[in-house]
Image (cartoon, rainbow, N blue to C red; front, side):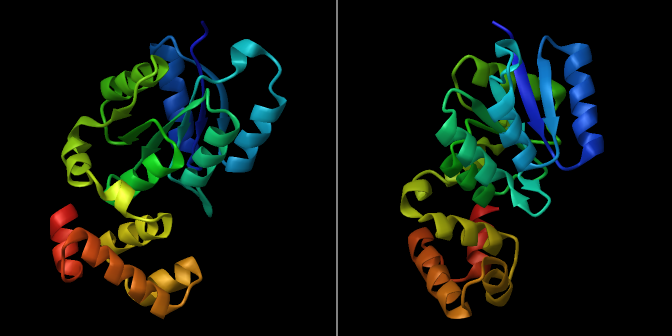
Length: 204
């Protein structure tokens, strides 16, 4: 069976570098590279050759103004046979939670070794799930939070860990500061902390 994949990353140099590495050093076939979510989704709808259809799609977290997580969710719902691997500069707990929520089967950072990236791809190809080794401690800390947090709480949780104020969070999510305050209070209760400092110390 052809080991084919797509890569979606809005940084063209990183995109081409990863594509060239995979083509020159592995048995993976890169059947498509895209810098935006719409381009990737369009390709999935129009691709004609079965051997070009991706078994895995490598997705960056941020695709310009678009969210990689939203792209993964759309792919997972429309084509559950395709496995998505989040490939990102970020390795914070909130992003790992969002990746799981979106349906991604793996999460690896862009600072991971080439060997670990290949291990992640092979694990997903064989039907498993993969999280970067150095993130396993973070994953353990998150145990149980996935079922406790609502989707909006996961997003706000990540922004809190980034050090953003309630006003900044409200502006980015187009909700009121009062709503953010309520969400933050729920997050503190669910994580058993009293303030931002304790939250960051506990989960960073």
